[in-house]
Length: 151
Image 1 (spheres, helix red, strand yellow):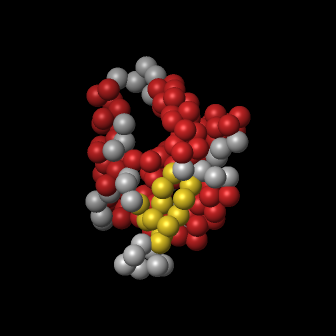
Image 2 (cartoon, one colour):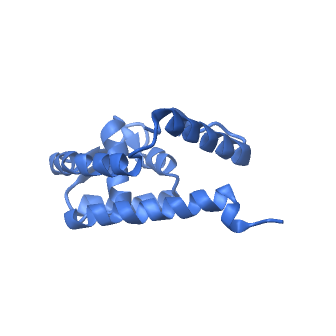
Image 3 (cartoon, helix red, strand yellow):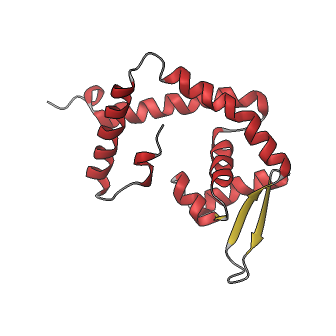
């Protein structure tokens, strides 16, 4: 008989929500949301990323990423510029202030990650990542770039 509390998809969804809420609390004193910091992360590590590419990396719809970017831009953390080839395509770059805030919050994110995986052997973590990626592939039948990026 089906038991929702034993369903891996349900367990991972519930866990993801718990992790997201916990990280949100860590960033709150800095007046930063988890989504804003994730956007800043991808902009920082990807030279010349577009709004569409950012939406794809964050697994959110482009209108949602536009609202997120408007907030970052209004706070002076981000610059958007059109490309010469297509004025509709917006390239993203953190401002100096944005880079500094991102770097200031990097240790907060790193501590959160380390606290979350404390006392879990590296082999178990790698097995978890492999199993989770296989489940995602089984669900969507497509490869996911993040398989090797989960640290």
